[in-house]
Length: 297
Image (cartoon, rainbow, N blue to C red; front, side, top):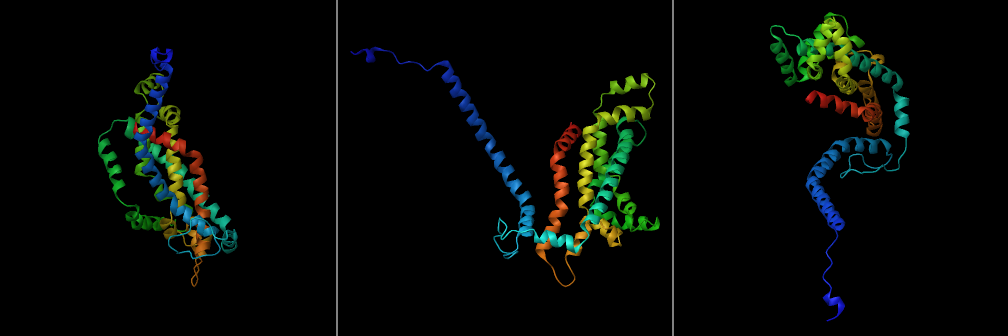
């Protein structure tokens, strides 16, 4: 017998076996996560596609807007539709109005929701659970159901056609109160007891302890309120009567005339409306997720 036939088979080294085990575990992990990634990809396409179609329409200058299947890339791309938007409406004035309305709504919502959530989270008084249950119950009602009552109230207060009339009904929301209540309840009770032993009153506890520790929730609520206030259309169009006071979401309706409708120009206006708030959300989404993570806990 030759020497090659008498030599025993060389067993794979431990490093090779470990590498194969890691590779196998990694492969199983990928296969296990694959359905989740596929589902997320489908949801991402469904979510992003309307905005992408609007952007493609706004950049295109030729072709049928309503063709099916719709084009995925601009045809003869140009910025002429965006230029026509600036020539047709006073876009910068509408931007200023939207910033004013959104900023006032965000500040007012943070103040009122925080002040309402603190006693619900940390104070004991008769009917506390009933009050909180009534606030949460309003979440099942559509916002439009309050329009008539709010419009009558705003009219009686002579606040129509004003920023205050648009902002005031949107300051106290059930979502904001719930989010802040959960954030305040996550603060350790020992910390509050120690502050009371040191002589701090309720206002000092709220201002110096609760609010600093609830910054993630405040950030999430601010972003959520900003997006909602920036995009709202129906209520400002009901309250506002002077075009120079319109926010951007209402002002872009002037891009569609009485006797003509330029779809590409309207799409360009819609893109210009969405882009600012989209940029803000992209840069602040981590704070948004951190705030809701704390609320869930």
